[in-house]
Image 1: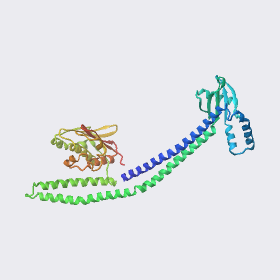
Image 2: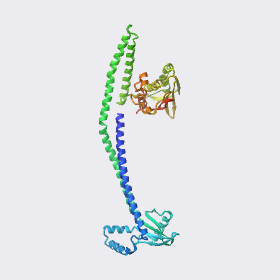
Image 3: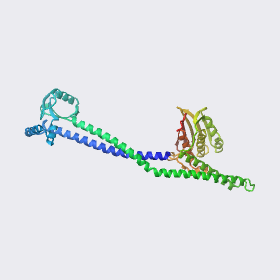
Image 4: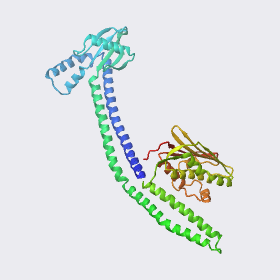
Length: 427
């Protein structure tokens, strides 16, 4: 059932959208918070180096700190002090002249970088023209020093950046795993959610089909009895019999339309595809309306490209042609001009019905293909419409892999456009 499938897809998409927003927010917030925290920690550390002339601590406590960390290195412990010592190995400062010449390398412990590596790093940093940034995995901060020189404070963040990259990779994998799990759960949940709706929809369709079949017989009997009674000379021409006959015919058409839609909903509507003359079918369907249009004071114009060959069910497409032209005449006033066009364009077959007059409001354009919807109830009562014609027309278009759309400028014109592929593949 197409409606239930569409409902299930909407439920799945709704659940996935909520889950996607939730997980995106959580993972993004955690990653951004950790990155910003590490970034701030590195920036604060560089600022501290700048304030202490390239050292981590003031001059009066450097000797004590260096001795303390030397002991920790010899003991090779894994406690907090050792971790801080590893941290100390990642930083140094360089005093650079205005011309970019290195005057002094300031360090609290032996470095694992050669003078050439440090020179290349300083050259890259100075080329950036920024006082702070990241180059080759080194975070730097440039501050003014004495005698017009600059102090470049540097911390090696390669391991931290690698950890952040790894964390982001794992977070991304976890994110996609969560989405896949959410999709599977939504799939199961949607089946449970729409189960009752599917049952109710199936019951409703069965009721419409059963009611339609049950009504066909009494409608036919009433019609036959009216014909018999009209044969009586005393009752011939009785207006009340005419009213009964007209309403009986309308009821018959309504039941026929309901059965058509019920079969389509149940996917039991048989559409037999074959090649036929589309142009000739349009003419045969539309020409009988010339008399109706003339009697109503309207002008019916036909602009049909000859010998258009279409692959589809000619009987149903003719019904669509009739519905659109009949709809145009019923919703137009005296003096209106109705134009019917049929032509090919870019391997597509186009059928247009346009009428001048009141047009269709923007709100109604979104609803006119709904079943039993009538934008003008007074006109519908006058013309005898039930609001099923356009719904049936759109169903026919869909069953032929085509589209039927409406467009209008209120107070000027309304236009319905059917677009079909030249060669239709049965879906």
